[in-house]
Image (cartoon, rainbow, N blue to C red; front, side):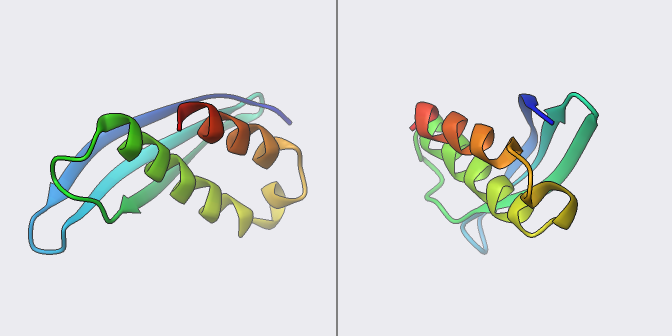
Length: 85
């Protein structure tokens, strides 16, 4: 299985918790996995830093999914995060 793309949607910042919340779609040849991701960053954070943090949270969550963690998908996701950072 191969990761073919990402989509970060509906990103909101919660002032009370100083946390960004976003829906992240990881697109694969076999379908799409939607994840609710969070990042504790300041409100004025650079968008690229926020993107990397949200993709990092997606990677963290996917590592816990038995149907995904044993595949090469996580390597591709980690490479994308490294490139973005």
